[in-house]
Image 1 (spheres, rainbow, N blue to C red):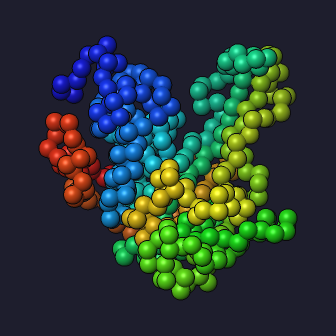
Image 2: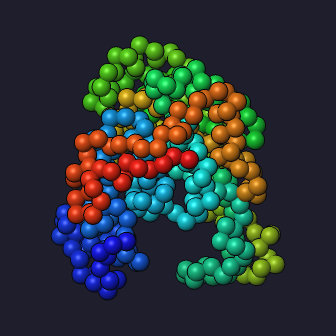
Image 3: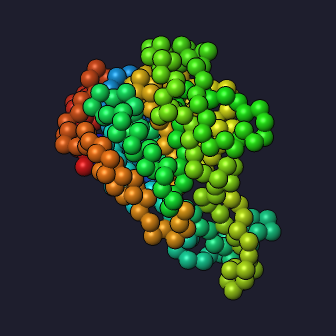
Length: 360
Ligand SMILES: [Zn+2]
């Protein structure tokens, strides 16, 4: 990388936007080693703001896909759906995630499956009393956004994809429309409803343009909340500790992390629409996302071993239902009109390099 300051000088640099130290993460901690990707010169918080601005400024779904790919390829270290650098555990998933983007599917969150991804039993960090042998395991999951109004991605294909995923017994799946709202459950048993029709949201206009089109097909099954997940209890990560390695296998799993949305009740937070990555941190929708009336599709493996390639499983279903690879082979995507401020202070010609992301 040309013209990079030596590491020890990096700490002295001020963010060109907020004038705070430029080496700071969104949490205000120094980033070490220094960040050298796109938009360097800004602190991570200002980078995230700038990236959200770009997500707001693009008009095409493919641009959203490309911006997300830049994050997956570590060209930038934050994204609206995930404010910090891509977790290293995601590295092995990146090729599979990139392939799903070729079908027009945006990935928002994921984790690989397996027992102790860090490699075997280990001494836990001393945390209070909690010192001992430690083991973690996780199920693979992925959270996806799939457009339903894209002219080149047939809605009936999306419908077939979702139906087939929901019907499978080796995975659990939750599907709902990001741009619709669902009734708040009144009775306890309603929390567990596996299928809930959307309601026309009264304040839809403030989020989305063209809402009349949305309200006209509220009865479309595609936009129902549907789930094959056990409500409230779909654990994807858990851990256990023991004083000795031998005692571990007898210990109960604890510290459970669940899938974000297993029942319609999980969507009632803040009375807002149900975004997994279609909005910025202030809750403002990205127009290029909302116009696609995307489905959030949450898929988790039942398997703990990590032997199942969940992303390949999803891709295989894409192939089987005939979802077209609309975004394969598009080598030079351009983010028109945003290059000037995107690349300020950088040596590349404005708007060119960023656009040269090659898919596949
Ligand atoms: Zn800043």
